[in-house]
Image (cartoon, rainbow, N blue to C red; front, side, top):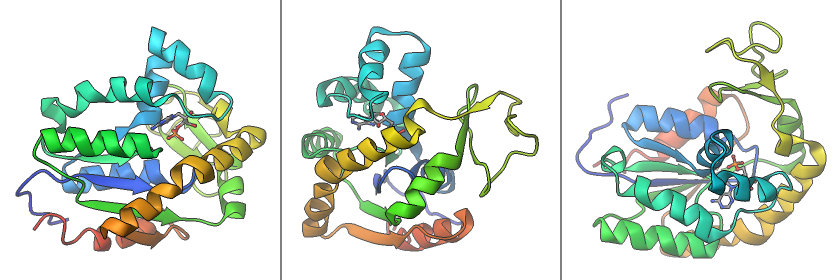
Length: 225
Ligand code: AMP
C-alpha cells in the first residue's frame, strides 16, 4: 500500500450490521495509517471494564437498540480530540443517527477537519442473517471469525490470542432482526444526507474480504492527495 500521508483524513464506513464494516475498517485504518474508531468496540470495552457507562449501554445493546446519542457522544469526544486521532480516523458504527452525524461534523470542524469520504458497504438481507448467525468473536481480543467463511484453525479458539470464541449476545437471530429494523429507521437516512453532500460512494460488500477491501481502497484513492 502506498498511501501518501499529507493531512488528516476522516472516513466514515456505513452499512447494515454484518456488512463487514469492522473487518474492513481495521484493514483501511492499517493501510492508511488512521485510527480505527468503532463505537461498538468502545462500548463493549466499557461493559468489560464494568463502568457506569458500560452498564447503561448494555441494557440497550442486548436488545439490539441504539445506545442514546449523548452517551455515545460523551464516550467519543475525548478520543477524537486525542493525539491518537490527530492523523484522522476510520469511523465504524458511527454515526448511526442524524444527531450523531451533526455532532461528528461539529467536532471535526473544531479540529479544522471534515469527513473526506463516506463508504457504504451494501449487502443483501439474506446474506446479513447468515453472516451474523455464523459470526464468532474472541472474548479476549475481539478478533472476528465465521464458522464457514473464515473459520478458526481450532474450533472455538482464537487464532490470534488463543482466547475462547463465542457468539455475541446481539448476534442472535432475534436480536439481529431488531438491529436491522433500527438500522433502516435511524441509520439508512444518513445515506441520503451524505449522498446530497456528494461524498458517498457505494461499494458492493459481496465476495471475499480481500475483494471488498480492494474496492474500498480504490474508492479512497483520492482521499490522501
Ligand atoms: P456494532 O458493534 O457497531 O454492531 O454495535 C453493537 C451495538 O452497540 C449496537 O447494536 C448498538 O446497541 C451499540 N452501538 C454501537 N455504536 C453505536 C452508536 N454510534 N450509537 C448508538 N449505539 C451504538
